Image 1 (cartoon, rainbow, N blue to C red):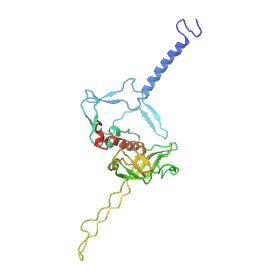
Image 2: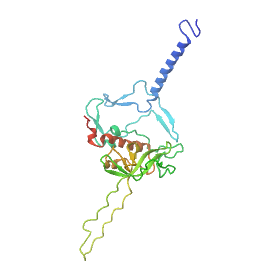
Image 3: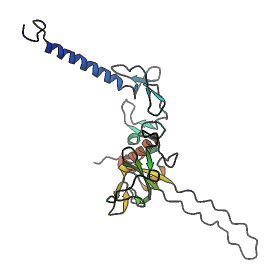
Length: 288
């Protein structure tokens, strides 16, 4: 027998090759099971005789639940049974599975199509030290704008319709990755209330005390994802082509003024993403 031969028909190279095939097949099987820890089982448009939707798992089956330790405390089990947190505000165009959906409400706020977002944890994304990662520069004072780059603070924000939606108030940065993620936009304050009619009374007659005006509310602000903004030093403004000026009032708000949660981050970005299709009716029409 030649060198490396185990028998007259099998040698070491064949054994190594077959071992690699078996290992690779096992690796693919393992990875296909592990990637089903999130998002499975799928809900199909098809329904069972009992009335419920068909659960789609496919091959291989889902793995057994595993508990993961989170870096800043707590645990997470996957896979886990989860029900949709909110009803789908859309209806199919046709009665067969896979039919396109059309929104029944405000798709930019309801998470339909390009405005869809994941139900992430409603907590801030922490740094390794446990501090909120995404904060405004008024909090992260160690950050500054490079002298050669335009500073958008104080610039007007011009929306799709050419109207001013607000003014950039601050810049939100990622402390860990040293990058800009959001621009904080101050919306225009509502007009002051006009004086009540009939304030002036004829001289000599008793007049009622003037109605008290409501105190001016604090300036309302929203976050604008930097990927949807175009800062121009030559024009001295920030252009946004995804939504109209009046639609800035519908941008999801933050619970706290100086931090953003993972869920809020996705909802805000999805709102502007949804505007690329739903901000104006003409965007939903065919090009030809």
